[in-house]
Length: 321
Image 1 (spheres, rainbow, N blue to C red):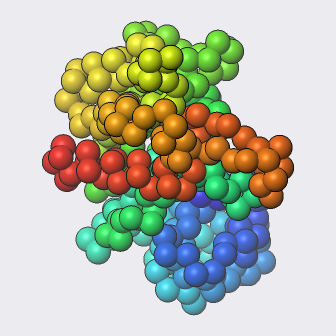
Image 2 (cartoon, one colour; image 1 turned 180 degrees about the vertical axis):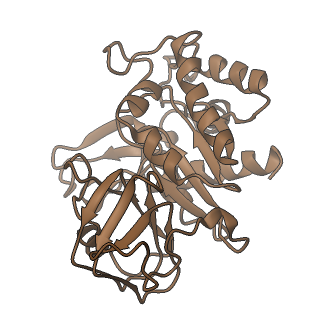
């Protein structure tokens, strides 16, 4: 997802600049979320395929331009107003201008992922480190996966940084919102810290309510287990009461729960201490991205990310599809 914001708080201040930055050949559509404001641009040309240009507010997100031409395939323009520079109310030169894709039965559903570094995407400069949400994109073909997870975020900081607001603007009926936090809610620093039976569920309810308001399905996930074994080879529980709080909230709200903590604990325990390193980002010194080596028992490598993504899909199927 790219954010277009006139005040400079996003990735781009111009819609055309955001369009031009989209790489070609992506299977999953790229979302360009345009925040509220009046954007005066000369000519907008969308040659790329697979774009969703979404305004934060139909009335308050206004594109003023001489022309808005779409020549790419699978391009949707939703929830914004487009006016010609001379003040004409709407231009016919826009593909799906102002239409809401919630009305289109043929729209492919999107799974939005909200979470932390164990779920998020990584670039080649951090390979082989990979979030399981990144791997999930390789395993599903009938839906789109929009991985909005971000390293270091808690249920609180994700909200405070307006990341949930960005996702909320894009949610539509038929979508799913996967919510997995806990690793950083445990941290003591004020911007991230929550308490498991008080502020943690309060923040999680904001995600749940946002999904339900849009007609999407919220799905709760407990955090994946860390690879921490004791001297007897028994895996330690490192997430305190946060997984129990997540389970309780799912039961209280009547929502599906994917218990990734229990599933990954079983996997790691079955593998054992030494073999389970193969799922995590353990690299010997001399690796091009980790010249000093790394021994990371929290973050996954590609093999681990793929295995955990498969576990998530299995749990999803077992919970009802």
